[in-house]
Image 1 (cartoon, rainbow, N blue to C red):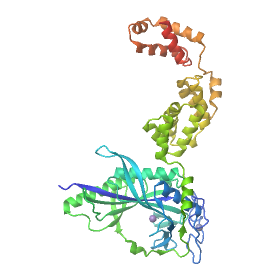
Image 2: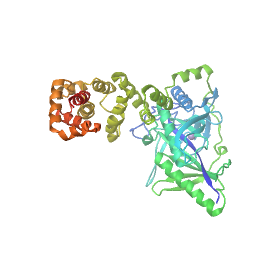
Image 3: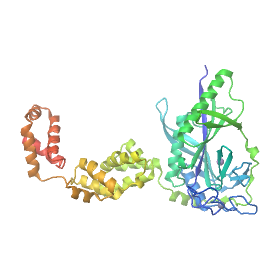
Image 4: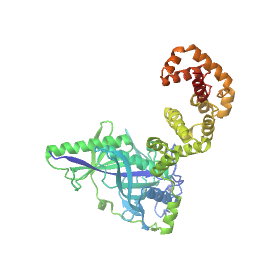
Length: 481
Ligand code: ZN
Ligand code: MN
């Protein structure tokens, strides 16, 4: 039988983080507001109103495009995309058609293919700017409409059909999310509807270069839906091909019904001619000079892949740890501050990754939503590095108290009397006691089982309630034997 492969391209719509909407002064934050209070004559499309381009949205769109390795176009313009729909008061969307703000990007996704290859380049066709429509809510007796987000700034990121599976599509979408968050271009919060996907799916004979008729699955608003819908559609087209002996004969626009876990057909796919695109007469073209592009590049924050490589090199971290620490810039900044204060990157990585993250994951919050600041964490680890408190005491009692109360670690250590004992007299007493009481272990060690010394150290630590300096204990026991 012919071997088939899936051909998938993604369009990602992401809300741009700005104070105001794309072409008017309405706030870009309608979260929690009652419906239809955040509107004005411009975003409602009243006759005679003049839209004005939001500079902040333009700048952030360019940041996103640069971060996705796109070429910024020196000349770009806006166009009207005409269609009728109740959520579109103007009767058209202001978008970019043939001259978008940027083209020809590419990002690398970390993806393990069947032949064991890690990493794959996914080409990006373009990133362009446009405004959002309103929100329709279908209820039993009709449809409700909320125009609060009408006119909100969007960027649309279009990929080439380089993706070959639902997993690849999802890992590409996650990478894009990470990148646009990093550069502050979008919060890309799926739960708040700030990022959504349209996936184009077709199949072909493996190795073929042709692009067959596709289904465009609209408005997938979670990674889970994205994967489920693509998996379903690839399967559906494959079964049809096996039954009918040919590929899909036209393009379809389809939706995903998550309750039924199936695709439903919305309409046969519209071509660009259906939209009667023409240049937006009220907004002048955008001209960007080489010098401005250089300035944008200078202002661009460090990107995840670069940061990860730097963390591995500068802090001696393994790839996994570096990857997790650089998943978002908040955590990465936090980690770097902690290292600066305590001077021990391995210790800092281990505390941030295993202790702090365990607490954060339980509550599903980020480093900025909790009480242990980087300064406090740094101080705590400095005490560990200096041998003032033991690692276990720091991990346990002290951190827990810091996390709960936000109190300074040195205060907690003093109050609870947790300082590590380096007083050799006291440690010697405990060691003697343990050595005398455990003649069997001592005999083992003398018989060559050097590892058994660990259990003696453990017993001494227990005797001293975890407060002895384990290095001193180790030295002292060796001396005694
Ligand atoms: Zn407005
Ligand atoms: Mn769009």
